[in-house]
Amino acid sequence: MPALSEVLAALDALWPPERAEQWDAVGTVCGDPRAGVERVLFAVDPVQEVVEEAVRLGADLLVTHHPLYLRGTTTVAADTFKGRVVHTLIKHDIALHVAHTNADTADPGVSDALAGALDLRVLGPLVPDPGDPAGRRGLGRVCELVHPMTLAEFGRYAAKRLPATAQGLRIAGDPEREVRRVAVSGGSGDSLFDDVRAAGVDVFLTADLRHHPASEATQRTPLALVDAAHWATEWPWCEQAAAQLDEISDRHGWNLRTHVSRTVTDPWTAHAASDTSGATTDGAFAASATDHTPTNTTGAPR
Image 1: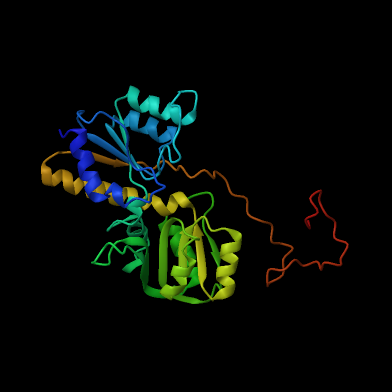
Image 2: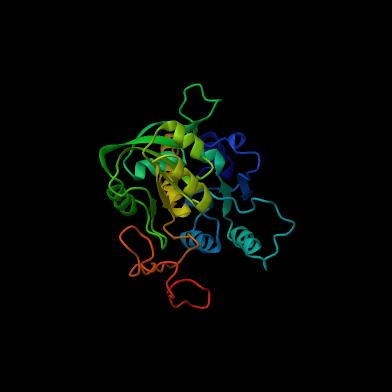
């Protein structure tokens, strides 16, 4: 059985902490370096539900993509939800390790796992890491579909291939437009529109797209957008990361048992579709602005 320090050294070799963004909080949150490790659980979020899953599993180490304390804290009191996470982990001798932006830009990284989940052929990073002479590391990935399809078909395809969430997928663009070249970025991606346009792709799949950046992106070019849930775009990394640690374990004879949490930690739990019965074929409201349409208390057309 390897010591926690040995396993953490292997994880830091996969995702060097010095490659994380300066604002990020990666690395080990809690854990005794001398403790033995037999079971490891991978998850996106270090929330209480996942920690309790680690307890039930008998895990010695929990590896998450998102940090627990991204902005620091002055307390780990158990009457705070993050403090309760720390108390539960320590009480059950479970270490917590975080690989965030250092895993985003790794080779392979979070976007490679996302591309793999969609069976896309990766051509290279969307935003190359200037420190990588091989040109393989960086943020996001530029990819190609095995076969071209319409945007509507790609949306349905992506919805089937990604983990199910209440949000599902939102799509912007001409549904009948043919798409072949795809950019993907796990997590929030609307800061990358300049890079996406420069890559000359047909569609950009990412998460957390906001109204104004998305609107401006679609007005400037015919670029299509697919907006998935943040958690769904990053969960495939957990399976990729577990497989990477499995390979290291086999090489060293550690006999680690790795597990991937399937607990859906996306914060949105339900979805109510809009009533489109009053819309025309081009998406406009059937009633004109001058009609005396009954309104509800917010003034929105019924």
